[in-house]
Length: 408
Image (cartoon, rainbow, N blue to C red; front, side):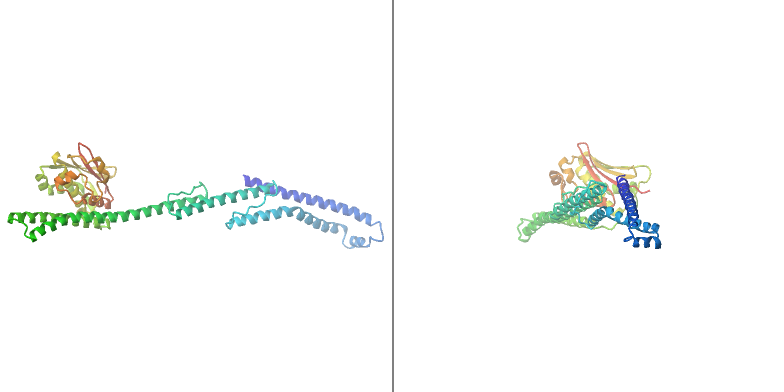
């Protein structure tokens, strides 16, 4: 509406100039006619005027003179407006070329002055915002990725500022991921070195005793050999788990097929019968009457749930049973492996799936412990299948819950 009013006001101003030019032309023509009538009375100076009247005619002469006078007055009266308009147009052109620091002078409180004032205001606003954006870019270039450029809504430069903020956040996230990856690599090397060195030191120690004949009899010799063998088995399991973990996280190829989780867990429970009987633990599978289908690589999924069931037997033997629940909820398959032994300490739950993390040091000693990679491997296998895993633990039970998208 403001632009329409400005346009109408300027149009009326030029219309007024047009009317004034006509009136001035008419006034000059009237004065010229009176002057001509006066001149005709003097024979000595009226010859040229008489010739014009007789050969061209008074009306054509008046018409040509009127057009010339009208143009003269119109140009003279409109020249300030045209020049001021050109000055405003040049300033706007400079703004279009990215030069916002040269304001146009506001010469009058007229409509053109208002346009000039608006142009100056826009230029100042853009210049200030560009300075803010430029300052933000300098801060980001210094590594201050938390700095956010103010985003003006419904503003094209605001969209640019928003994109810069998103780019900065993404860059910060990428750098953090790179740092985390470097820390992960260093932690992995440290963890592997420690876990390899411990059994290897024991093996070398006992082999040194044997090599130097520092044993009393064959019984003690066999005892040393037995310990070295057990440590070698532990060492091999660690290497196997480490290889499996690395292979999964480096993009393990999957042979995805339709898999009925009811049959899968019934078969898996049967395979664990010797372990269950040895620990005096029973295992029950609670499943719907109909097939529960997901798309998965059965061989790899076996490894994931072997870890969960082995842990349930190892740490839940006091509860004398392990329950496996298979349910369908909101187009998802929910699988719970539950044991009723000692709970996982609450402080350890956030780290339970971290590699080389052992939740209960005392229980690890009592049960023979593990490599600290089992649950990390399980989590990786579940996640490459598009699923998720979580754990909850209290005095009553410990539940590992996995969720997969259901396949129709």
